Image (cartoon, rainbow, N blue to C red; front, side, top):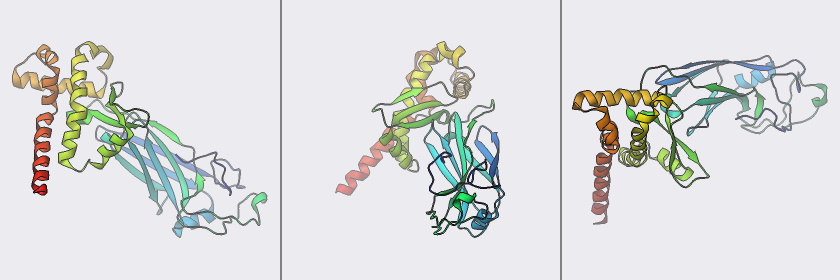
Length: 289
C-alpha cells in the first residue's frame, strides 16, 4: 500500500493541507460485489493545477493499488484521462476483504519539482522526484467483500490459495466464504506460474484440493451449524444434493465415503491428474530417445 506518513524528501499532496497552502486530494469509493466479480469505482479529485498539468502531459498518473492479503492478489492500476476509474476483479482471485489505496505517481524523473501552492518553507528549493515516486496520496481503505446468496457453479471455485513464508506444509481454514488453503511461498509462486498449463494445474489441483475436500466432507455433518452460512458450505450442500438425486444414494453414504465423493465433486480430478502425469512422462521418454 502507498505510505501516508512516509518520510518524503519533497512536499506531498494529502487529504489535509500540510505541504500545500490550499491544495488537497480526495477520493470516493463505490463497491459492488457479486458471485462472479467485484467492481470498484473510484472518483479522485484534486484542486492543484500544476499536478493536473503533469497528468495531462503524462508525466504523472493516478495509481490504484488493490491487495487481498488473505489471497495471493496484489495489482496496480494506472489511468490518466479523467478523475474516475472502474476496476473489476474476478471473484476467485480474492477473499475476505480488499485493501485499496490511491495515489498520484511520477511517470518520469522530474528534476526541478516546483508548485505554485507550496507552503513558504519550500519556496525556491530545488527538489528531484524520481520515476514512480509518489506526488499525492489518499488514506488507504479496507473493503469487506460481500457475496450474495447464490452458490458457485463449480466446486473448485470454493478454494483460495495463500502464500506464507513461514510454513513448510499445507494447511487450510474453513472460516471464510471460500476455504483458504495456505501453502509455502515457493509452492504458491509455482502454482501461479502453472495456472495456464492445463496438465500441470490439474495435477496440482488434485494434490491440493482432494485431501482438503475429503477432510471437509468428513466434518460437514457435525459442522453444519457452524458453517451453514458460508458460501463454500452452500455450494457443497447443493452439489451433494445433486449426487444424491443422480446416484440414488443417501447423505450418510456420502459422509461415510468422503474421499470417494471428494473426487466426484471435483469431477474425478485425481484420475485425470494421473493420466496427465502419465502423458507427461511418456512425452519425456520420447524426448530422451
